[in-house]
Image: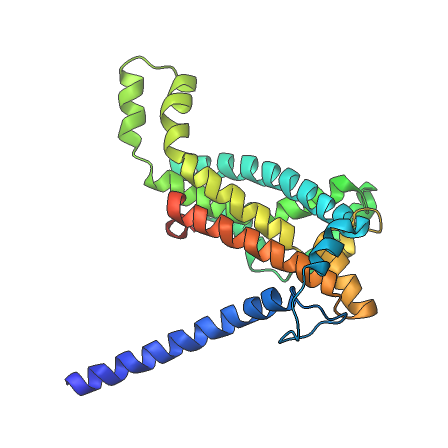
Length: 265
């Protein structure tokens, strides 16, 4: 019996090790290749240099693309977080006919292929005349990130103890005071977790951005994709990708350490 259990544990450990290798190996390759002194993408590097990081900071094209990604990500996060929080609060506090259908509709973008979503948006934007505009791009990203906000905030509101709100109301607190002094402090970790994940989802979006953005508002992932198709792997993009990976890892560690966001997703 012990031998069988030991064999099962060994198999699980081996599968976990393979999973970690598959996930982490591309990250290791990008990070080490970003310090290469070669003029082309090379792994393992024959020598090490910071020249591609210097080139990344000096490139106006990549700075502009990163600026667009940051702007779109922040605006889309604000829209989806506001709408998602309100929708999640209504779904968690109310019982009405069609509730499950509305929840399914809000989470639908998670199941749809992004290319299908983008084609549908192209037709709608053509009717509205907002194709290739910043507004259109932000709304597209907000639609794609809304399910994450709804899912996280719904979990947050379900875990919220209603008796605290009822007690505050019984003691004479007005609804705005209950929300400001009771609800917001308790849901704040969920709000931050939702904001971080929706922003990262928006920042990394490629498929919809390629079709919706147009030539004026190229996000960083779209710029990188265009560069790869036309000129191959540019070491400058590898350096930028390594910096973004480091930033995402820092966000993930902070989110898990202080917000326990894996429990909320």
